[in-house]
Amino acid sequence: VDPDGDGRSTRWKLTLIAEPELPVGNHGLKLELRSDRADIPGDWSAQDGAQMNPEVAGDGAAAAAGPGAVVWAQIEVLPLYQLSTSQIFFGYLKPGALASRNVRMNSYDEKFELELPIVRIEGFDGEELPFAEYFRAVVEPVPSLPNAWDIQLQVDGLPDNAAGDFRGQVMIEVPNPDYSPLVLRFNGVCRP
View 1: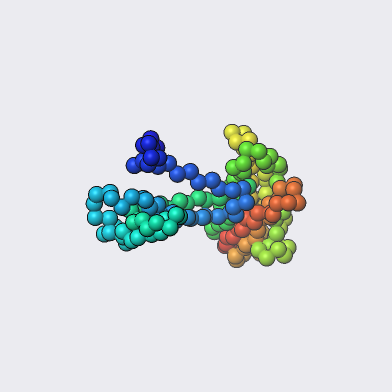
View 2: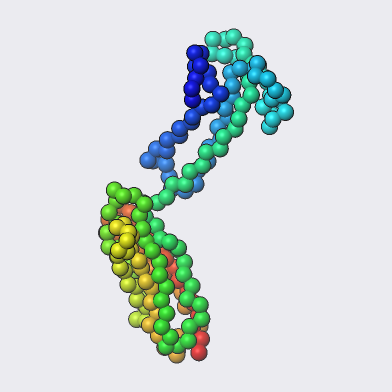
């Protein structure tokens, strides 16, 4: 920023660009910035091992490494679409009790149209869910967000013989074979 006639400045602006191929997740990068001038006043050798060691410049001439700084850059790459949570707990339910839990599915990419997802309720490991007829998933658009859906998982009064733990999963797919389904796991306990 505001370089002098030799192209030197006391302040610099650093711009990092994340390529589209960067995988989903958290990424960090350590950048060590070093001045090419060793004649800056101050005791720089005491700072984080930033010592004034000689370095060889590109033309073969010896140059002293000047003071520097370490900059950490971090980025979180979000998936194309995701759920607000990946697990819900119904808690303790009495037989015949009605209960529901809401999860939001949304996309952060304005160019991606998040179509109506296809939902399927199954057992925790993909098997048939016991008492499946008492579970329902209702999907509705979110009026204030164009690229989001609310998914409500409902338990419609488990029978008396369903006493004990229950657990399962909701498989949520977008109608595009290029994208993997999302898994929403659920569990609870039915007790009289």
